[in-house]
Image (tube, rainbow, N blue to C red; front, side, top):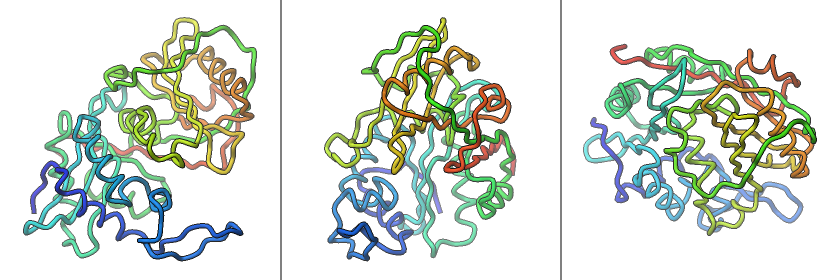
Length: 312
């Protein structure tokens, strides 16, 4: 087995790995009920709805090209010239406690891969990570992945909680402008106190670029990309309408400073002006206590794990 950088030539093989995870291909009928449909009869968006861009060769090629262009590091695990695993690694430079590291945001292993394949893959990923430090995330109740990361020398680093706040207008003074420049260099050294379900760089690359303009069903979901300055605190904020709950937005925020009440007020005000009633935040328990609000039962906790260089 060997780990190497993916190429566009690998697109089909990687897509097959992700498609193999789908037990049933479905779409909604005229009554809104799920019906089983052959894969070839589904539209690109209907395939996308089963797990994202890797579920079609067309969108997979677009996404892989974006990664190879600098958005991330796509890696494949190869055995006897056959691809048996895939992972995406994102380089992050943020403040304590995670600092500089590579985040594993997406990975898949073929069912027929040897039992030691994932361990070998993680070792290979570390050679591509900044300072050979890796992070990964999952639900703390996902016992399979928690056991996996623990076995592979990952240790719990940050536990994130989902909370819900009401949108509220007229709180404080701030300046907010729509973003055109979404270069990831703008968040170098910045943390992500709100919405950090995976890593700052991974979420930036999936939320901020306008990559899917040719898929109208994807771009139909409202997403507001903002540059906010609240009493001297600069931040980039993404407000994304929650599927099936059009009056709620999921909030993602990147900023170089500790979270301030003024910034929270500006985000709540902006959401209210956009016509939303509530906001969903993911943050540490300490920050959630300062912000207030109530538990978001539609969300879920996220545990961030870290694997330091030299651990075995």
